[in-house]
Length: 203
Length: 225
Image 1 (cartoon, helix red, strand yellow):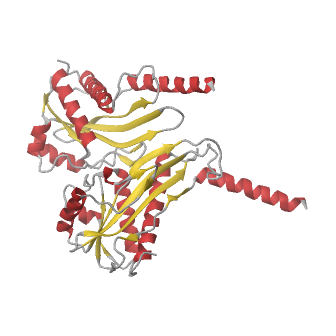
Image 2: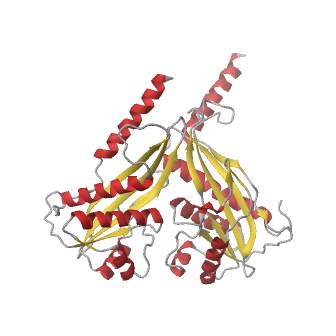
Image 3: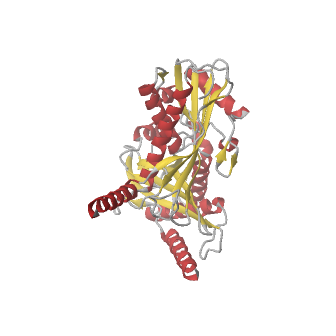
């Protein structure tokens, strides 16, 4: 019985460490010469959690980067409907994301960019979530995927897929978030750090 | 005497292997489509199926039910694409999901809160169909079993399974009220050899089939069967 609990604890510890070193964003071409400019963080789905995450990433980029970051208020003001569902890069996304980057409704994103007039559009989707329950410890998972487009042209220059996990129902070593809100705040910071570092846009 | 025994053992092994590979889904707790008012008559006319939210599961259910209604009934069914064209924010988060009473995975009642009813009415104003079916999902979970049991003979993973609640509401117009409803908890045993999303996909397809079959059972009747 104790051995079984130890195994569970080790798996949880492994997953927590994995989350902390996970990359949330990767540029497609490492040697690409990028210039700064304006950026808009778009919520790819019209639900509260997805929009909250877009707001958090917007705030982090505003604090930590040299980008001219469009506020969510400006985005909502410029688009006739926002947030609105944009078909994202997946074939199925119930429990996890079966990614397929050819499935994104890029035309919709291009139309949005036309109204926003920004150089970069970062779209973030959180389409899948599940609670894994059972032997004493529960895990809430939020699966996210993103794409960064550069304009003019609307070329995809980066993307990322990651899982936000919150362990409940026991002491979890290594986990610093106590709620979904805190977890999302931590990941927003991480997304911003990953984008800024790779695009060399630190303040 | 030995041969028939060997055959039956082989058959059992084949059944178990098939079940492990394919998994199995079923309605854990079925409530037939019930008429909200015993005297209501549902006539086949124009109908639209609305996903209660922009959740992928809800969208899948709405698409499947739309397809099956077209195949199996004489209703004039509005395509999901047409709904999207008429309502720019569709699929969106119209339904407040906490509106369904839940108690230990059983759901009861034909509840469509005042806000939810108003949201559906607003959608119908753009669609102008005689009926609107609203479907959504609640509480998708992975339930860990406690060993092979009679209820999960083919799970072989200690009876682990996915479970989801699917409330369905048929709203009639111009009356603007729920004419029939259905609340079901669906379960699908977890199989090692099938990706999670495929299990959910299968679960949703069978939920849609069961919903349409149950719906057909109340068509043209004065009382729910």
